[in-house]
Length: 154
Image (cartoon, rainbow, N blue to C red; front, top):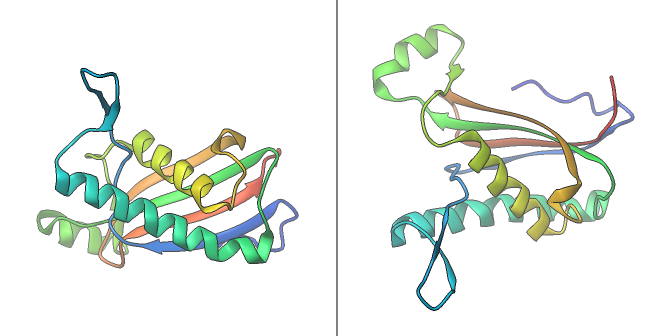
């Protein structure tokens, strides 16, 4: 992955999260009005594990940079294992290629923003005013590369 320009005046923090990126799930409204996470018990557990992994990695950065507030830019690349059917094509492309199948990128971003807020690294994911996000398949590690920047132009 391309490393951020840490000398840039808007750069705040960058870190990687190892794991299996899992999107934020849809809610199901119960007859009593309660809202519950949808999906199977296994999917809910996978979702919780991923959100905890992101929050734990972000929490480690709070001591370095404090709680971030103001206009923030999130740059995130979600990394998935290459299916065996495409391994040779991806390896020929330097070991990385676009992932144009599920899960949805917007739901992955939503899960990431919620986890960054839960970690205390950012005050609120509403502070994310600019997002650069991508999904790739890779023959290397899986998870996410996350960067936070002060929002700005240039």
